[in-house]
Length: 172
Image (cartoon, rainbow, N blue to C red; front, side, top):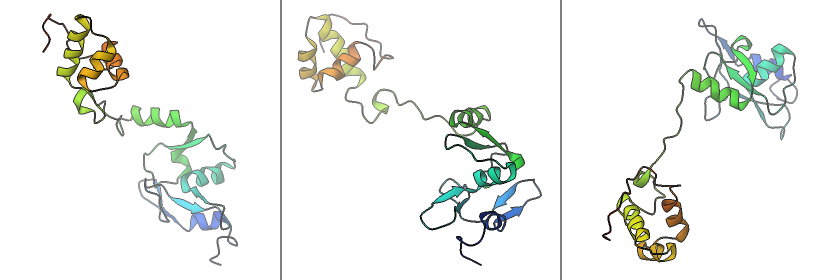
């Protein structure tokens, strides 16, 4: 029987497992864009389940909550060995990743390195000089061609904090 609706999911699952010498049970079926195995839940329209999640449920005889995440001790997304898997939250999974120094946090794009930046270091210094000389935030924003909230964020040091803004009385 090839029909997913007729063959029990446990039998369909085990057909896609290769037992490796390293101890991992490598998933040989379909995988998602992140390398995790996926298998149809049964009938059309019921969607897929990640193979490692299914493995954990089958071999531990549990039904997981949607909030529960299955993490890999072996860091092999294709592994479905229940001995290599543990239950956690998404936060636990991220902490595990960071603790093992896998992945990386997104870089912080400061100043003109941020593609959304409307100012540059020179303009930030200029804004501070204008303010020192009594200009309103409306006038500074108009003068520099940006919005008032952009100017207020810079002047209140919510953005561009790293810029040395010690000013002189000359406007440049």
